[in-house]
Image (cartoon, rainbow, N blue to C red; front, top):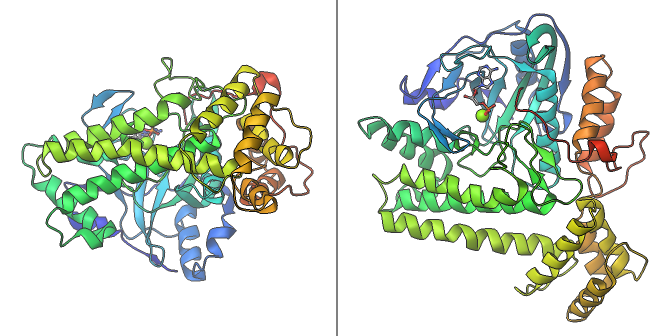
Length: 464
Ligand code: AMP
Ligand code: MG
């Protein structure tokens, strides 16, 4: 696997991205390298070059700040863009974009300083790895660089950079931006570029634009069903944070829910709960409908409407599939949605931890004591009698779909505080645990435990 530069997006020209000089941080003190990604076969010269870029020893060939728009908390913002991120190239075999977050100011920085603080870089790094291990489509990161450069947020913090890798950096907001231009020439160029790059199989089809849109809708629905199954809340599902390839993207004040609360809001600035856990599926559809509006020049409105109707079908089917697996069920029956809802209601009423409650399913299947409701257990056992697969395999199915480890905001905070003191043991331990979420690993850290009541379901601020 090689690092290729510049990114082929540059061929689209200056209407799509500005060429901006990358600004390394002063005094890079530490690096953290994602060895799991490196071990996927990254060439040593490429690794060294990327490290050299973050250190400021060598310059990227060309770095691009993309322009896009977006709906932020429901309000249209006609121009956003990479205010602190630069696209510098690709990893060839995996066809992954390489982007530096916290790379300095760009023409799209508005009032921002172009920087990212270590807290937010560490959070994004950990989330990408956690999602990847849970088999949920997500951007990841290859490297973090920590520095002594002061960055002012609510208080002075330290600046860091994240070398992010993801299948694409094209967001729904890209189409919003180009659709608002008088001519639709660029919008068509972007659409064709996306189809050729990511959906080559559609390129010669007569209805390639419709096929593209349907695929974006499908992937978005599947991604959000995966989030719901694990208790993940994104926190800022603005259309400029939605990847067209259905990858979880642009992590900010996210949270893996602890006590089950469908109304949980992980973002402290989201006062109306637009992006609460229970609203995420509908917001995913709303975002797809914004994208649809921006493709009307290329796809018939009725076809767009029909494609949007598929969102719920994909979402419900995937959610039922995921949750049935958590319950150890091989056969699919729509009525199981009631069984699942009863369990969730019990968890909500009794303020139970989402992850830990699902771990009790194994106990129920083994006829051991669990904290779950007796009448529910009775219905659950009756349902299991209809399964043809043997008990041990049903238990295995449930074990393979119920993580023992999830990233809890309180524990992330512990790791951040340690790193800020120059200690990395907590990060290594957490990385090991999140890479094997379905096992208990021996560790001196208490990261499996739910957080104490006052820190449970911590809501964070957007500042990063
Ligand atoms: P986010 O909420 O992180 O998705 O960011 C929304 C927009 O603000 C994007 O266009 C970002 O590039 C931009 N932005 C966020 N933080 C900064 C910053 N510190 N400096 C410049 N631009 C920023
Ligand atoms: Mg963003």
